[in-house]
Image 1: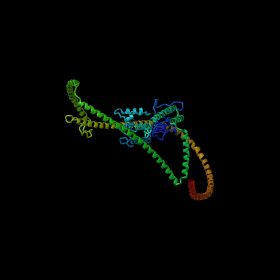
Image 2: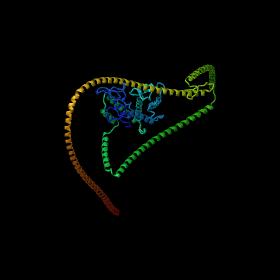
Image 3: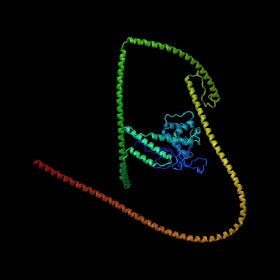
Image 4: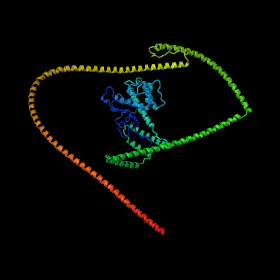
Length: 632
């Protein structure tokens, strides 16, 4: 199979954990739950609910879900965008993605804490160009274009146009950052789905692989449609669909179940053998080296197979190069043939003589040329008249330009841009001189320079306006919060005054009750004092008995501790003797095995020598027998 197996590539969170699917290039999530957002406004306990990217989930399995593609309900963002730790995590992810993809500008985590609108537009244009290389950011109505692009891509949450005016503000940057991180995940998924080719695509003949890819895509789309329908109906697990999809894939690629079962059994046996050998060779350095040797041999085989693949790929390229060389040679021969034909035709043209037909044709061409000359002369007169009209229009345009230049100088003096020492000139020359002093090229250069300076000045003014707007918005939010706090405090003050009045009334009533109860308390105090004396006597007697019991328990503890220490020493001595005996036994077994090995080698050598002697005798008998047969 030259394609990845079916996995959950959706950016939506999975509500039920499953070992079957995994989140690929998912947006980094905080450890907090999706149910309750971290926002400064207070929420009631009943407002916490489980929020899905596709809308609210119903309790019944038969009820359908509200899809984000067709529902009208405004979805809330379940991500903790107001959590500082989560925001820092998203900023780090954005910075790593930009550096990985080769962002042309200099970008750091510090600069991404509160970027300007200009920097945000550069980042957005760079990321979106990864999806559409022909995209160019428009110069006008950017605050409408960016939310529209995100909506077209399927961003499930609303990004207001007002947030584009102050991107780096503390109350708008988290929402914009969440949209950018979602766009990054979309780019990653797009790259993952588009990069499906092998390293050497020329190895296969092409037709079979294309047919298998079409069948695989068909099966995958059917599986995705079925699971999505079940998901929209309330299901969270798709075991039946998974089993059916796996069976279809096995039929498509002709998977042998018996071979898989035998390979699994072989793998289980080999795994058990490897575990046993690893347990036996934990202290054996020779076995470790042997395993390393096996690994190195496996790596060598892989490298050799990779080298053979490279060689076959090289041979394929050489075949293509030879084919191209043959085509080039054929083209050269064709060019030589065309050159010879051209020289032949040129020779015929140079040696031929004029005929009456040629003379008649030349006269006809002469008359045609005369007519052409007459028409051109008329066109020349019309062109001179048009040039005269254009000169008049040019003079009028010069007068208009001088009027506009005077208005420009007047407006520049009002804005304090002229002369160079003016307040807003910043040392730059904004004065435009007439074309009589300079040439046309100098005029164009001067206009370009002044336009650049004016654009820079406008940009600075816009940035200052955006900064002041952000400050104004933050101050308005602070004022609203202070006003709400003041109203809350006023309500609390009214409640406290009412409570004070009630407490004063209660205090008067309590003082009267206390005066009546003091008499009762005096009589009760006398009875309690007598009861206390009796309790002190009983406590003294109980304390003496407890002290005696504590002493007895301490003596018993010391006796038990001494017995435990003696038993521990006995066990340690027995264990040491057992280990010594086992070590001696192992050494004796090793010596016995070495003696047996030497004895077997000696017996094998003696048997080999005896067999050689017997074979030599057999050869002598055969030679004598052959000699006798020949003599007969």
